[in-house]
View (cartoon, rainbow, N blue to C red):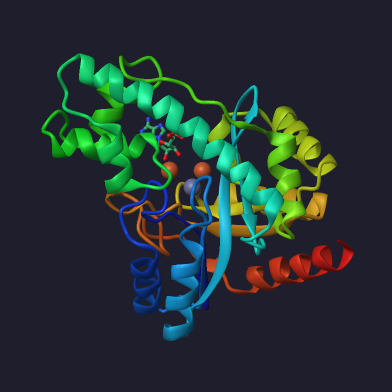
Length: 284
Ligand code: AMP
Ligand code: FE
Ligand code: FE
Ligand code: ZN
């Protein structure tokens, strides 16, 4: 089966492989297409698409928004116009909010004698810095054994250096992806620990604002879970998508293309997304 991976993070956000590197890895694995879907930025898409053209791997421009809906929900967007002014305005706001939160986290660490300087972090990890980057730095400085250990002891909610950040509302996340000509997709639906009625409510709420897809295959989901999500997608008329959520060595248990080993996202699913993107662009 021809397979793809539509959920990949790079150094543009909190992954450790560059956009060009993930395309090369995808080529070596024989994937026909990938999407670079970094947190709150499309700045890795250009480099990845150029490398993809050189290597014959299709690269779909993508993004992943963390959104407010009581708890944090992730909305993926595919085939967006990365130059869209509406998208750019929203991305600039999010990065400014991240920087404010991150500066305060860095100051808390510095006050305890951990030599963290946020300007240096921006130079090293920019443009979009997330907690996994703090984790990487704490490992490099010898304060943690792994990124996971850094989360557990320092930066997970409830730990001394955790601070929340402002996020987009879920409505706005879905809508701005549509405004940018993209296809909004609910990411990893089981990560929110919702019972079925609440999950359905979430899906229906997002659909009211323009949701078009559901991530049905994901590194952490088994066949039974994927089939359940596929049945929901069919019922609601949502396009199925899938991907690994590769973050390089920031999530070392997840491999590109194959997740924890058995992920297989059929290439046909991309055609469903492509058709939706074409028809939403026509309408707008
Ligand atoms: P931020 O958006 O900067 O607050 O960071 C959130 C990111 O940190 C998520 O997208 C995950 O990739 C990662 N993350 C959150 N919680 C954990 C955890 N307990 N262990 C490892 N990674 C985590
Ligand atoms: Fe992440
Ligand atoms: Fe996510
Ligand atoms: Zn992700």
